[in-house]
Image (cartoon, rainbow, N blue to C red; front, side):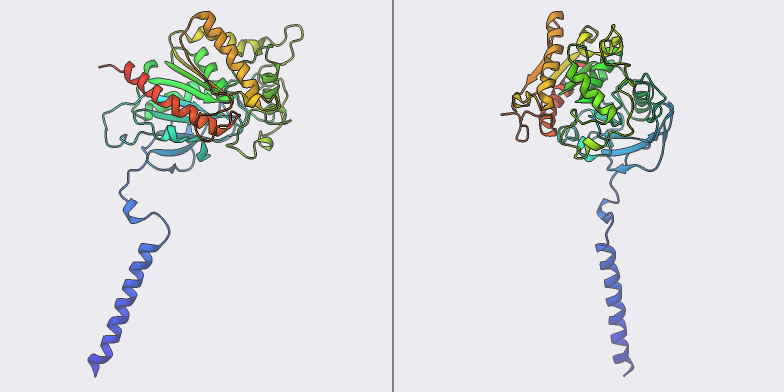
Amino acid sequence: MASRRLLPVRLRRATVAVAALAAALLAPGVPSAQADEPAPPKLNDGFGLTQTGGVTGTATNFVITVKTDEVAGPHNIRILLPSDYATEPIKRYPVFYFLHGASDDPANPAVAYPALTAAKSMITVIPDGGRRGWYTNWLDQKTAAGAQNWENFHINQVIPFIDANLRTVAARPGRAVGGLSMGGFGALHYAQRHPALFSQVATLSGADDLSRNHAVMRAAVVATLTNIGAPLCGSSHPTCNLDFGPTVSSDAIFGTPYPVFDADWRWNQADPSSHMGALAGMGISIYTGDGNGDAGNMEFWVRSAAQHAKDGLDALKYPYHYVDYGNGSGWGTECKGGHTSGCWAQDLVDLVPRLEAAFASAAPA
């Protein structure tokens, strides 16, 4: 009789044990099979950057958050590593600094375009450029936006921080800079002002002309400062029109944009199309569409800015790679020629293999 009473108890205990095991296996969270996956490399603070919070993402696609005295607020930096980074401990990799557009944020997964995550032989770093930081040190540091020394942040802090923490080719042949829209301006601006740092530069639908000859592009910059619209935003950020931060003066970055008594000299000084000579010896790539011929589409105006930059290169007889995909026909499946992420994704499909090939050809034997 006793044995018959014990059997159900043992069965009940076995059932409880099995249920507990099943619950553990089916519970939400990281599956046990992923427990042995490599973690992102540990990055040490330095060069004026202090990490805040934890690392989010995977071992090859992750975001860190830093603070700096150069720019107000916390700042996200997305880092994309090649798939063999963890398994090749003595290998060094060139770095592509990819600058995002207005109102975007490296924490937005959309900035990690497929062509970037598929890169096999280079690291990609996407640093925060602010909602309208314009990749420069602002003339007015006392606006409601607080400190805005974006060039100091990227050039003096982010680049040495990356070189100190990752196995990079920490020299000009191993660095490229590129960007889209606002970031296209930033890429040319940084390459022109710091030619000893970069061997390749690319601008994708960039604000390539800020001279007095391209008032529409100046107006687009002013729109981001004064919150009167979002002409330089693409489709990757649906709230772009409402998301530039505190309203500041139109003069905050480069002084007055109005060519009265030549008071706009700072805008002309920052204009990429007027300083293409500074890109001597670099690989140069320019991408643009035509906005389907619609003057209400920002890409219509981007095209003329890109053409002005091209004209400068032609006058200098510099080599370059220039793509005008027009209305987007044949340029991927999502590009319709406008100022949108579908076109930029295809730009990167064309650019990334060319960058990796250029890096490989420049690598020492």
